[in-house]
Amino acid sequence: MNIERIMEFPYWIIDILPKCVPDDRSTIYSKVEQYYLSQPQITELHRKQAEIIIKLSCYYDIQLSTDNGENFSKSALPDDIEKQFIACVGTKSLYISIESPECLITLDGCDTYMTVYTFDEEVAELIGVLARSVGLFTWTS
Image 1: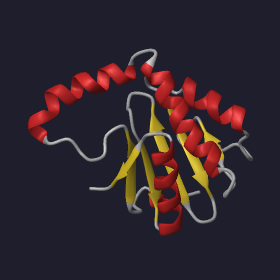
Image 2 (image 1 turned 90 degrees about the vertical axis):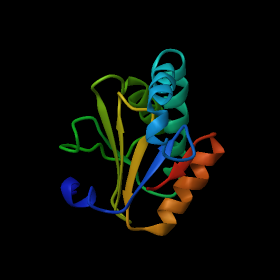
Image 3 (image 1 turned 30 degrees about the horizontal axis):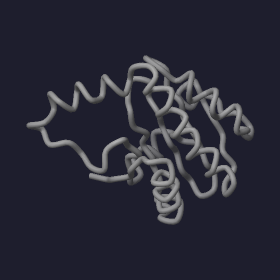
Image 4 (image 1 turned 45 degrees about the horizontal axis):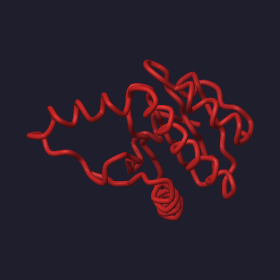
């Protein structure tokens, strides 16, 4: 998988909020973000994010990487997916790959959102439905 090339694809954000926060609200957003990055909120958020990927694995082969896309697991199982999401805090990152159709989903442990890179509208639409099913939102800028 060519990570740099895929990161040039159109992208969507899977987030706790339904759209980008205006610049003049950045101070309060920062406080809200810190709230969600603390315990127990971050574990609950990571479980929701993992649930999206676990459900997505019913439709596509999911592979995980904890080393910024250098190495991907073969096929990730639900328990492994959840464990990797919960462990992704601070400076850790998690990459989720679908080979066909090409899709990369990234999570940085210091963020409350995931980024989905894909040209495939069907995958993007399905991820949006799955995100809503766990109380999260998808948007693009």
